[in-house]
Image: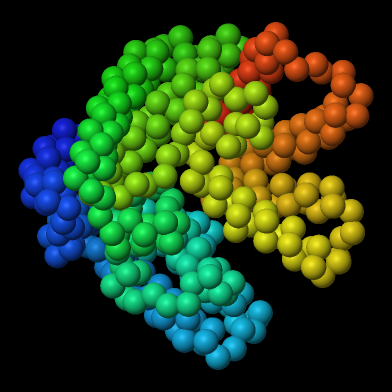
Length: 382
């Protein structure tokens, strides 16, 4: 049973979370009981496929060995080669199922949520390298990796923020607000995913007119698919965040009115925020830092633009090796680079004035670029 895929999952969760809610009002966290719920959810998600059960067990053991081994090594030495080797070994399972599909490794070794668990593990290793994380027990790593509300598709939390919530518990008044907010988010998820998203997908995208590949149908599909993608994924994120709140964990938001973005940079600060911020902090910023430190490239704009190309190419490849994902990544890289150039010129010459009319026009223009990007992402053009 895929998490959040049907009403049965929510009914089971509703029953299992009753003790958690009661304990929350007494400002208690049921550590052992929460572990039991995690086990139940993992069994529901993976028990039907023995390959996935074996894969997630092997993956978790592998990552625990890497993190535990590297943190012990980091207390003594800090060789760059060892750091990159450990990072490579951490992402190797994900690379195997992404790059070698012809060996059917995805069916044998892949499992639901492997990408998001890999992001979490790489984050831990980078934090250990930087010295911001000096110790982590196996129990703490398991709690972070296997936090069941977000295990399949995020949002991607940060370990320090997560640990702060796990190590404490809100007051009764604070938990009451968390519970109220969490339940509201869950109902919002139902509205987004199972009503609006479902209707767009079945009653509009599924029609014969949209399925015909004409210029007009492709044009309509572009907008409908963009809306469906948002409501489906934002609905899932609302479920995960809402359930996290019920557990007393403030999992970060993933969407913030992305279709009201004023420009493409603003869009990536609003769309799938936990993923875009992860790539920004752990790919783009580190690349820029290394380039400036080593002085391999002196022009900061060149560094920035190469960083954008690297960031969005990786983001595209993360979705898959198909051509439309690669083109989608490069498309957004060039949009970001183009907007940065435009913004710098506008600051100098002020040809795009800031007022309510240009604000509305900026949102309209950005929306067109966003939707065309999702049309590329859908693979319909290829």
